[in-house]
Length: 197
Image 1 (cartoon, helix red, strand yellow):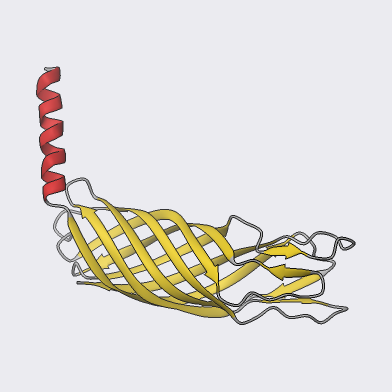
Image 2 (image 1 turned 60 degrees about the vertical axis):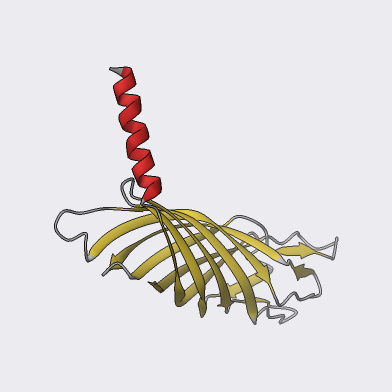
C-alpha cells in the first residue's frame, strides 16, 4: 500500500512538472505609502500615491495550484517626512523593486477556465535611486518588505491583485549622534494589473 501511494505521488508530481508553465508579461499599478516612525515628536509624515510599472514572469504547476512569480519594477513612492523645526522634506523616492511571491490559485469548478482567485505572499527588495543626506540622518540604499495579497486571474491572461507590504528594515541611518535615533519603516498598499502571454 505504501509503495502504491508513493508511486501515485511521484506520478502526480511528474505530471505537474511536465505541465508546468513559464509565462512572461507586463505589470503596472498604483501604491500608497504609510511610513511608520518611532519619533512622532521629532518627525511628522503624510501619505501620498505613487505608481509602479515593469515586467514579470510566472512559473505555475497547474495540478498543484502553486505558482512562483518574479517581477522587475520601476516604483515611485511619494512619501513626505518633515521636521517641524528644520522643515526638511524627504520626497522623490524612486526605486528599482524586485518582488518574489509564492502564489496559490484556486481552481473553481466550471469557472476556472476564465476566472481563478489567488492569494500570494513573499518578500520584495527595493533599491533606492534617490539617496539623500539631511541634517540628522540619510536615507539608505536598500529596503525590504513582506507582501501579503490576493487577486483574480481573468481569461488566463489578466491578473488583478492587491497587496500590503510590511516594511522589514529601517530606511534611514543616523549621522548626528546627539539626536534621538530615528527609525522609519516603509509600509504600502499596492494595486496592480498584469497581462501574461
